[in-house]
Amino acid sequence: MSLKFWIEWALKFKRHLLLIAALTLLSSAATLALPWLAAQLLGGVLAGSSGQSVSLDLTQVLVALVVILVLMTLLNIAAAVLSESSSTRILTELRKRIYAHVQMMPIAFHDDARRGDILALTSYEVGNLSDFLAASLANAPAQIVTALGAVAVLFLIDPAMALIVPLLVPAFYVLAKVAGRRLREVSQKVRGAEAELIAITERDLAMLPAIKSFAVEAEHRKNFAAAAEKSRKLALGQARLNAFIGPVMALFAAVAAIGVLLVAHDQLSGEGRPVSELFAFLLYAALLTRPVAGLANIYGIYQMARGTLARLEGVLSLEPEPGYDEGDTIGRADGGIAFEQVEFGYPGRAPVFRDLNLEIAPGEIVALTGENGVGKSTLVRLLLRYYRPDRGTIRLDGRDIEALQIQSLRRQFGYVPQRALLFNGTVSANIAFGKADACPQAIAKAARLAQAEDFIASLPDGLDTEIGDNGVRLSGGQRQRIALARALFCDPPILILDEATSMFDLESEAAFVEDCVESLEGRTVMIITHRPASLALADRVLKVGPGGVREIASDAR
Ligand SMILES: Nc1ncnc2c1ncn2[C@@H]1O[C@H](COP(=O)(O)OP(=O)(O)OP(=O)(O)O)[C@@H](O)[C@H]1O
Image 1 (cartoon, rainbow, N blue to C red):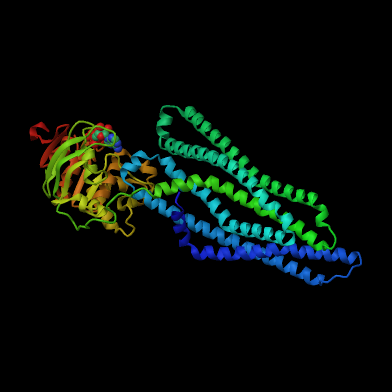
Image 2 (cartoon, protein in one colour):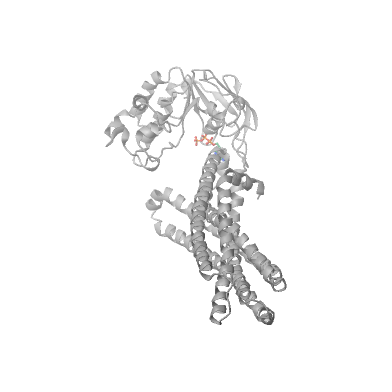
């Protein structure tokens, strides 16, 4: 884990952090003044009761004590509020950054990643970090200053006796190391178990209709319960270990202080030593136990957050998809497409294409057919630059698509994938997809072109009907029509329909095809289909096969 990375983050919030540091330093100074004043007060009271003269004005000491206590309270409140606000700000920034980064990772990354891990990172794990940041920002500097200050005062009072403190450091170190390593291991397992739980929840919610139809609810409940129990046991182990570190360290420090008092009892109460000094030594020794326990706790939380920090940095240091910040931005393309000697295979798989050559003229309507798994959708994924060819060139209007800014390339396409990707929202929002200022007429026109107008009108709230997760409240064909309307809404120069009418009934498909003649005018269109009505739309029908792409005669369609 690079310190540089985190220092860069901290520097973004330097004003907040400096203010917190100033507040905590003041609070530490006040904390350090307390034992001295209390010792003076006790010494004074004792001296007064035994009839000796008292040099200090005890009322003043009392007032000073109260003032410092009030001041400390105010400083602690301000530091806690400020540190909470800073830690939540840092976390929000991190969340935004992780989201943006994950979004900009290539599709290949998402093919390999487990969604549960990403969800765990942005939710549960970031929460762990929040605990660490809040604890360390507010407490660590104050604890360190208080501990150092207490040691310094102990040395001032009696250097020989105070030597016990440095002697304790190795013991603390060993204890912290051993407990810290164990805590790190356990927290790693806790994180794994939590991510597993999130992944199971996410998967089972998506699979729920299948779980119900196959009547395997009990098996899935059992599986989830086992994962939840595993997570609970690990979390309990972690909590036990964490609960033990701070108090044991404090006990160490307290026993050491008592040991000093026992061993050096004679020296401390020796001739000529004012009783207030004796009290002060005792109080500072007792004060020392608090920051020791506090720092041990922070160390424990740090060990738990370390894995998250490493994973966060791991994700953030992955190279995003190239082409977001470089390449030429283009206006509306004419729509000429060419694949030249393209070779491509998914990682670890045999090549899908070895020497793919294909040319589509601007405005041409081309149908692509071929057996399942032969590579028709892959061809589109290459064109959209979801994946990059291992060899060869893909051109748009004669330009290598690698040289284009990736979003300006993708905006040329209206892509209707095999499985329509809809989200939980209204029909309109799904058609306009992310364009908040979309005009209702344009949405209605796209719906009409996609043959979706009638069924939308029959929905309870028309275009404002909520369609549920992934359009669950619609039929398969209705979902496809909305996906189609979304593609047409952007008025792209190139339209790609990947089995986009596979769920249309024959009549609707014929009506769509008829309507398309008008709406496809002036666009390059690639239709991946086996359906005769859609094939009939095409100027050319191409068959994709292991040997490449070849044109087939219209009677072979
Ligand atoms: N993300 C992926 N990782 C690895 N292999 C993949 C991936 N996606 C597809 N494949 C494989 O690549 C080959 C081509 O798949 P593709 O989806 O392009 O076929 P297709 O011609 O569109 O098939 P269908 O007609 O069934 O939709 C298949 O053998 C498939 O198993």
